[in-house]
Image (cartoon, rainbow, N blue to C red; front, side, top):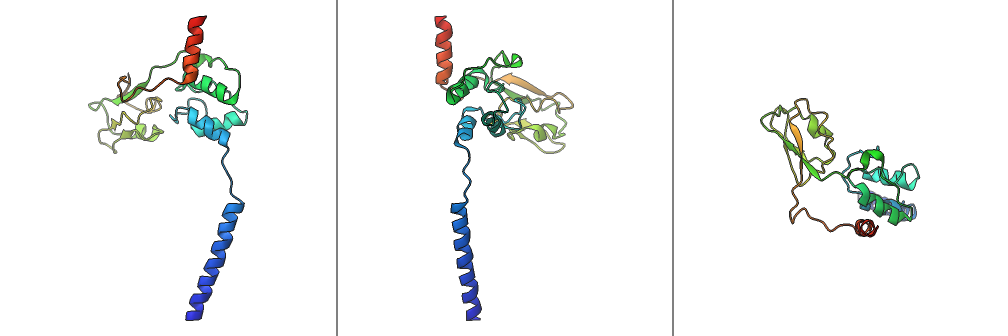
Length: 187
């Protein structure tokens, strides 16, 4: 009995050492450029760029499969930041994105909601709360305004309202955005 425990313990030590060595020796680091690009993107995970999320859009940019001007929620400020980060020339925004949208948040009319859960399934950031055949509501601090919850709603009870600018929602503008603004004023 004691010998079986010693053999099992020795095997566990050997396999643990082999696995530890393999984890260090064959470690795959993520691409740091992808990480930097991903940090510049707005993280709405909305898919409006044609990719399922911000990370996959960042990977496509690094692989040369996508331009830096496809992010509607990020708009011109994200495009300028990406151009500066990647040392590329700024590219005019896609024609569909020329006007930057004001930040919006989804609001559900609770009197009209039938509790179908289609909006919950469509929300990429899980900002909608509710269960089947019960009233739903939106956690406004989690909503990214991607509008992906609008098409599946069968009763059109979801409206997009402008996000109120207060001290909790205000952010410093990105330096590239300030440079673009001062350049446009000088011209």
